[in-house]
Image (cartoon, rainbow, N blue to C red; front, side, top):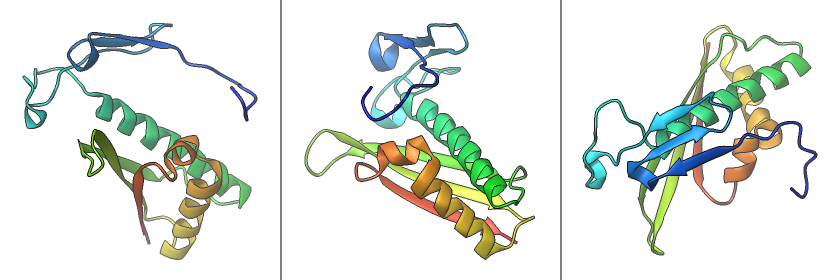
Length: 145
């Protein structure tokens, strides 16, 4: 892993691709996958998709990055809600791609202040933001007081 000093490494195994299972090796996460009807699959109840998993991970990670930045600026962003929408579809260049919409809401912080904190978290801290930058269209919106 060049470029980082690992503090933690998660391990997971998937079997059967988008119509199979995926689980963390430590048992903390275990999901059954199904291709959604919108993508031509069966859309089985009580299943998930890689996009759901990516969205939940990105939302949680971004919330942590926002909280980290806020504390550095002696602000409190623990009341912030981060939602993440991950869309998948065919790319003009072939294959499939992702598009992401992140929304940060915290009515306890002024709009300009929350925007500044969210921008800094996105640009400097969040590893999901670093991983997607230049590869995936990520739209960040902020709703403060």
